[in-house]
Length: 198
Image 1: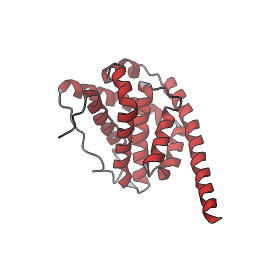
Image 2: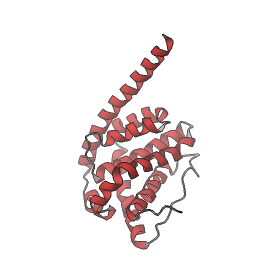
Image 3: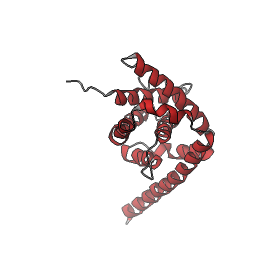
Image 4: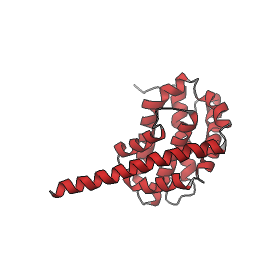
């Protein structure tokens, strides 16, 4: 029996796929790594996805200017080839336990940027994994919040008024946490290598 997705879940799945597709557009060798843009079953949900895609595209344009965030993503790309490490990165977007529409948009942006970095690093096989792991995280940790907060349609007013300064302050907090995470991964790798030699 096929699993029937709720409208909010389906919007999240299609939206993430479109955001990642946007990020991968123009990257050589990225064709066919994701499903082609899926359409929603009804016109209302399709309009929601189209509008949200455009809003996240604008937020992504502001985040692309954040050198610290993007340098952090660059540094992590080769270390995110398993779900555990990727989820640790994702959980840093929500490090203080506070979920917002902006942070969900940042998560989708980060997933797309990591996918781009995987292709550039000649690791395109991980793009579908990044999509799958992000969707798993979304469904298990964020979908209930989306539904409790009025569904995706409720995100419009908040995402439409996200000023660039607010996104910059949000992205400025995220890299600090990511840098701490990177330090932990590197220290853990070093300690693991040392313990293997003794």
